[in-house]
Length: 297
Ligand SMILES: [Fe+2]
Image (cartoon, rainbow, N blue to C red; front, side, top):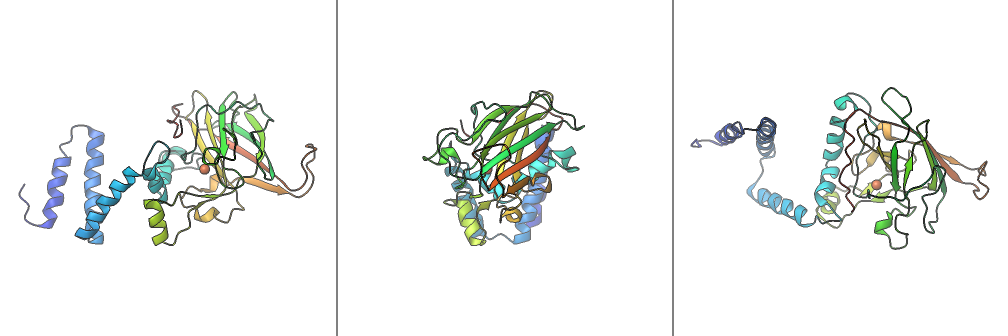
Protein backbone atom coordinates (compact mmCIF):
# COMPACT_ATOMS: atom_id res chain seq x y z
CA UNK A 1 0.00 0.00 0.00
CA UNK A 2 1.30 3.40 -0.95
CA UNK A 3 0.70 5.92 1.81
CA UNK A 4 -0.93 9.22 0.82
CA UNK A 5 -2.03 10.68 4.17
CA UNK A 6 -1.20 10.05 7.81
CA UNK A 7 -4.47 8.12 8.27
CA UNK A 8 -3.32 5.60 5.65
CA UNK A 9 -0.42 4.40 7.82
CA UNK A 10 -2.80 2.94 10.37
CA UNK A 11 -4.89 1.19 7.75
CA UNK A 12 -1.74 -0.21 6.10
CA UNK A 13 -0.23 -1.46 9.35
CA UNK A 14 -3.53 -2.92 10.46
CA UNK A 15 -3.97 -4.76 7.17
CA UNK A 16 -0.56 -6.38 7.63
CA UNK A 17 -1.36 -7.34 11.23
CA UNK A 18 -4.60 -8.93 10.03
CA UNK A 19 -2.52 -11.41 8.04
CA UNK A 20 -0.89 -12.88 11.16
CA UNK A 21 -1.66 -16.60 11.05
CA UNK A 22 -1.82 -17.32 14.80
CA UNK A 23 -5.25 -16.08 15.89
CA UNK A 24 -4.24 -14.85 19.35
CA UNK A 25 -1.14 -13.06 18.05
CA UNK A 26 -3.33 -11.55 15.32
CA UNK A 27 -5.83 -10.28 17.88
CA UNK A 28 -3.06 -8.75 19.99
CA UNK A 29 -1.21 -7.11 17.09
CA UNK A 30 -4.31 -5.65 15.45
CA UNK A 31 -5.39 -4.12 18.76
CA UNK A 32 -1.86 -2.94 19.53
CA UNK A 33 -1.61 -1.04 16.26
CA UNK A 34 -5.07 0.44 16.76
CA UNK A 35 -4.32 1.71 20.28
CA UNK A 36 -0.68 2.65 19.70
CA UNK A 37 -1.53 4.72 16.64
CA UNK A 38 -4.48 6.21 18.51
CA UNK A 39 -2.24 7.14 21.42
CA UNK A 40 0.32 8.79 19.13
CA UNK A 41 -2.43 10.87 17.47
CA UNK A 42 -3.97 11.66 20.83
CA UNK A 43 -0.80 13.21 22.27
CA UNK A 44 0.56 14.40 18.87
CA UNK A 45 3.86 12.71 19.70
CA UNK A 46 6.79 14.80 18.49
CA UNK A 47 9.87 13.41 16.75
CA UNK A 48 12.05 14.33 19.74
CA UNK A 49 9.65 12.57 22.10
CA UNK A 50 9.65 9.49 19.90
CA UNK A 51 13.45 9.33 19.99
CA UNK A 52 13.37 9.79 23.74
CA UNK A 53 10.76 7.03 24.10
CA UNK A 54 12.96 4.63 22.12
CA UNK A 55 15.94 5.49 24.33
CA UNK A 56 13.85 4.93 27.47
CA UNK A 57 12.73 1.49 26.31
CA UNK A 58 16.35 0.60 25.66
CA UNK A 59 17.34 1.82 29.09
CA UNK A 60 14.58 -0.24 30.74
CA UNK A 61 16.16 -3.32 29.18
CA UNK A 62 19.72 -2.35 30.08
CA UNK A 63 18.75 -1.78 33.73
CA UNK A 64 17.19 -5.24 34.00
CA UNK A 65 19.44 -7.95 35.43
CA UNK A 66 19.08 -11.29 37.25
CA UNK A 67 18.22 -9.45 40.46
CA UNK A 68 16.37 -6.38 39.22
CA UNK A 69 13.70 -5.95 36.57
CA UNK A 70 13.13 -2.31 35.66
CA UNK A 71 10.51 -3.30 33.07
CA UNK A 72 8.32 -5.02 35.65
CA UNK A 73 8.90 -2.10 38.01
CA UNK A 74 7.65 0.29 35.32
CA UNK A 75 4.67 -1.94 34.54
CA UNK A 76 3.74 -1.84 38.21
CA UNK A 77 4.23 1.91 38.43
CA UNK A 78 1.81 2.40 35.52
CA UNK A 79 -0.85 0.12 37.03
CA UNK A 80 -0.37 -2.43 34.25
CA UNK A 81 0.63 -5.36 36.50
CA UNK A 82 -2.34 -4.80 38.77
CA UNK A 83 -4.73 -4.56 35.80
CA UNK A 84 -3.45 -7.84 34.32
CA UNK A 85 -3.87 -9.51 37.72
CA UNK A 86 -7.42 -8.26 38.25
CA UNK A 87 -8.52 -9.09 34.70
CA UNK A 88 -7.33 -12.68 35.02
CA UNK A 89 -8.62 -13.56 38.48
CA UNK A 90 -11.83 -13.27 40.47
CA UNK A 91 -13.97 -14.73 37.69
CA UNK A 92 -12.12 -12.70 35.04
CA UNK A 93 -12.40 -9.45 36.95
CA UNK A 94 -16.06 -9.83 37.95
CA UNK A 95 -15.62 -10.64 41.61
CA UNK A 96 -13.27 -10.06 44.50
CA UNK A 97 -9.96 -11.90 44.37
CA UNK A 98 -7.16 -12.61 46.81
CA UNK A 99 -4.68 -12.67 43.93
CA UNK A 100 -2.10 -9.90 43.90
CA UNK A 101 1.32 -9.06 42.55
CA UNK A 102 4.18 -11.51 43.07
CA UNK A 103 6.81 -8.77 43.39
CA UNK A 104 10.52 -9.31 42.89
CA UNK A 105 11.39 -10.91 46.24
CA UNK A 106 9.87 -14.39 46.24
CA UNK A 107 12.55 -17.07 46.68
CA UNK A 108 12.33 -20.78 46.04
CA UNK A 109 13.11 -23.19 48.88
CA UNK A 110 12.21 -21.14 51.90
CA UNK A 111 13.01 -23.06 55.08
CA UNK A 112 10.23 -25.20 56.51
CA UNK A 113 8.45 -23.83 59.58
CA UNK A 114 6.01 -25.79 61.74
CA UNK A 115 2.74 -24.08 62.57
CA UNK A 116 3.25 -21.86 65.58
CA UNK A 117 6.93 -21.44 64.73
CA UNK A 118 8.90 -18.29 64.00
CA UNK A 119 10.23 -16.98 60.71
CA UNK A 120 12.65 -14.61 62.46
CA UNK A 121 16.12 -16.09 61.89
CA UNK A 122 18.41 -13.34 63.10
CA UNK A 123 18.28 -10.40 65.50
CA UNK A 124 15.40 -8.36 64.03
CA UNK A 125 14.27 -5.55 66.28
CA UNK A 126 10.55 -5.02 65.87
CA UNK A 127 7.14 -5.45 67.41
CA UNK A 128 5.99 -9.10 67.57
CA UNK A 129 3.38 -10.14 65.02
CA UNK A 130 1.21 -13.24 65.31
CA UNK A 131 -0.39 -14.39 62.06
CA UNK A 132 -3.35 -16.77 62.10
CA UNK A 133 -4.56 -17.64 58.64
CA UNK A 134 -6.95 -20.01 56.98
CA UNK A 135 -6.95 -21.20 53.39
CA UNK A 136 -10.33 -21.98 51.84
CA UNK A 137 -11.64 -23.14 48.46
CA UNK A 138 -14.15 -21.18 46.37
CA UNK A 139 -17.00 -22.72 48.40
CA UNK A 140 -15.39 -21.63 51.68
CA UNK A 141 -14.33 -25.13 52.71
CA UNK A 142 -10.85 -25.62 54.20
CA UNK A 143 -7.92 -26.45 51.95
CA UNK A 144 -5.78 -28.89 53.94
CA UNK A 145 -2.14 -29.73 53.18
CA UNK A 146 -1.58 -26.61 51.06
CA UNK A 147 2.04 -25.44 50.84
CA UNK A 148 2.36 -21.83 51.93
CA UNK A 149 5.39 -19.60 51.37
CA UNK A 150 5.34 -16.41 53.40
CA UNK A 151 7.81 -13.55 53.18
CA UNK A 152 7.97 -9.91 54.16
CA UNK A 153 10.24 -6.93 54.59
CA UNK A 154 11.89 -6.20 57.92
CA UNK A 155 10.87 -3.45 60.35
CA UNK A 156 13.34 -1.20 58.51
CA UNK A 157 11.75 -1.98 55.15
CA UNK A 158 14.32 -4.34 53.63
CA UNK A 159 14.02 -7.94 52.48
CA UNK A 160 16.78 -10.19 53.80
CA UNK A 161 18.55 -10.43 50.45
CA UNK A 162 18.79 -6.61 50.30
CA UNK A 163 20.21 -6.34 53.78
CA UNK A 164 23.56 -7.73 55.01
CA UNK A 165 22.36 -7.31 58.62
CA UNK A 166 19.78 -10.09 58.20
CA UNK A 167 20.43 -13.82 58.11
CA UNK A 168 19.80 -15.69 54.86
CA UNK A 169 16.05 -16.44 54.57
CA UNK A 170 15.16 -14.19 57.51
CA UNK A 171 11.42 -13.41 57.57
CA UNK A 172 10.67 -16.21 55.12
CA UNK A 173 9.12 -19.61 55.73
CA UNK A 174 7.28 -22.51 54.17
CA UNK A 175 4.29 -23.81 56.13
CA UNK A 176 1.63 -26.44 55.51
CA UNK A 177 -2.05 -25.97 56.29
CA UNK A 178 -3.60 -28.35 58.83
CA UNK A 179 -6.83 -30.35 58.38
CA UNK A 180 -8.86 -27.18 59.00
CA UNK A 181 -6.90 -25.24 56.35
CA UNK A 182 -5.09 -23.21 58.98
CA UNK A 183 -1.50 -22.03 59.23
CA UNK A 184 -0.02 -19.78 61.85
CA UNK A 185 3.35 -18.36 62.76
CA UNK A 186 5.14 -15.61 64.65
CA UNK A 187 7.17 -12.80 63.11
CA UNK A 188 7.74 -9.09 63.58
CA UNK A 189 5.61 -6.28 62.22
CA UNK A 190 6.84 -5.13 58.82
CA UNK A 191 6.83 -1.58 57.47
CA UNK A 192 6.34 -0.14 54.00
CA UNK A 193 9.35 0.38 51.77
CA UNK A 194 10.38 2.40 48.73
CA UNK A 195 10.84 0.74 45.34
CA UNK A 196 14.25 1.35 43.70
CA UNK A 197 14.41 4.89 42.34
CA UNK A 198 17.86 4.93 40.73
CA UNK A 199 16.56 4.18 37.22
CA UNK A 200 13.95 5.18 34.69
CA UNK A 201 11.06 4.59 37.10
CA UNK A 202 12.69 6.81 39.71
CA UNK A 203 13.02 9.64 37.16
CA UNK A 204 9.36 9.33 36.24
CA UNK A 205 8.24 9.37 39.87
CA UNK A 206 10.37 12.46 40.55
CA UNK A 207 8.90 14.31 37.57
CA UNK A 208 5.41 13.42 38.73
CA UNK A 209 6.14 14.28 42.38
CA UNK A 210 5.10 10.76 43.40
CA UNK A 211 6.46 9.05 46.50
CA UNK A 212 8.10 5.65 45.87
CA UNK A 213 6.48 3.73 48.74
CA UNK A 214 4.60 0.47 48.93
CA UNK A 215 2.45 0.13 52.06
CA UNK A 216 3.47 -2.53 54.61
CA UNK A 217 2.42 -5.98 53.46
CA UNK A 218 2.77 -9.71 54.01
CA UNK A 219 3.39 -11.83 50.92
CA UNK A 220 2.07 -15.37 50.53
CA UNK A 221 2.27 -17.96 47.77
CA UNK A 222 -0.10 -20.87 48.37
CA UNK A 223 -0.02 -24.03 46.27
CA UNK A 224 -2.24 -27.09 46.27
CA UNK A 225 -2.94 -29.37 43.29
CA UNK A 226 -6.39 -28.63 41.86
CA UNK A 227 -6.23 -24.89 42.51
CA UNK A 228 -4.60 -21.94 40.83
CA UNK A 229 -1.49 -21.01 42.77
CA UNK A 230 -2.56 -18.15 45.01
CA UNK A 231 -0.13 -15.24 45.02
CA UNK A 232 -1.34 -12.73 47.55
CA UNK A 233 -0.35 -9.71 49.59
CA UNK A 234 -2.11 -8.52 52.74
CA UNK A 235 -1.78 -4.83 53.56
CA UNK A 236 -1.66 -2.99 56.87
CA UNK A 237 -4.64 -0.59 57.01
CA UNK A 238 -2.69 1.76 59.30
CA UNK A 239 0.07 2.37 56.73
CA UNK A 240 0.16 6.02 55.61
CA UNK A 241 0.59 4.93 51.98
CA UNK A 242 -2.31 2.46 51.90
CA UNK A 243 -4.26 4.53 49.36
CA UNK A 244 -1.26 5.67 47.33
CA UNK A 245 0.72 2.45 46.70
CA UNK A 246 3.24 3.30 43.98
CA UNK A 247 2.52 -0.11 42.38
CA UNK A 248 -1.30 0.17 42.55
CA UNK A 249 -1.48 -3.19 44.33
CA UNK A 250 -3.93 -2.43 47.14
CA UNK A 251 -7.47 -3.69 46.62
CA UNK A 252 -10.23 -3.80 49.25
CA UNK A 253 -9.96 -7.58 49.48
CA UNK A 254 -6.28 -7.35 50.40
CA UNK A 255 -6.56 -4.98 53.35
CA UNK A 256 -5.71 -7.13 56.35
CA UNK A 257 -7.09 -7.29 59.83
CA UNK A 258 -3.83 -6.18 61.45
CA UNK A 259 -4.62 -5.28 65.06
CA UNK A 260 -2.29 -3.53 67.48
CA UNK A 261 -2.57 -4.79 71.06
CA UNK A 262 -1.47 -2.58 73.93
CA UNK A 263 -1.62 -5.21 76.65
CA UNK A 264 0.64 -8.14 77.51
CA UNK A 265 0.19 -11.16 75.25
CA UNK A 266 -2.18 -13.69 76.89
CA UNK A 267 -0.04 -16.77 76.25
CA UNK A 268 3.46 -15.73 75.10
CA UNK A 269 5.39 -14.92 78.25
CA UNK A 270 8.12 -12.95 76.45
CA UNK A 271 5.70 -10.61 74.68
CA UNK A 272 4.76 -7.39 76.40
CA UNK A 273 2.82 -4.55 74.84
CA UNK A 274 2.63 -3.62 72.10
CA UNK A 275 2.21 -6.55 69.72
CA UNK A 276 0.23 -7.15 66.55
CA UNK A 277 -2.06 -9.88 65.33
CA UNK A 278 -3.27 -10.61 61.84
CA UNK A 279 -6.23 -12.92 61.24
CA UNK A 280 -6.77 -13.60 57.59
CA UNK A 281 -8.61 -15.91 55.20
CA UNK A 282 -7.04 -16.74 51.84
CA UNK A 283 -9.55 -17.88 49.22
CA UNK A 284 -8.11 -20.00 46.42
CA UNK A 285 -9.56 -20.08 42.91
CA UNK A 286 -9.91 -22.84 40.33
CA UNK A 287 -7.07 -23.12 37.87
CA UNK A 288 -3.71 -24.65 37.15
CA UNK A 289 -1.33 -25.27 40.02
CA UNK A 290 1.62 -23.83 38.11
CA UNK A 291 4.30 -22.11 40.15
CA UNK A 292 5.73 -18.88 38.73
CA UNK A 293 9.43 -18.74 37.96
CA UNK A 294 11.15 -17.45 41.07
CA UNK A 295 12.32 -13.87 40.55
CA UNK A 296 15.18 -14.66 42.93
CA UNK A 297 16.91 -17.99 42.34
FE1 LIG B 1 6.89 -6.75 48.91
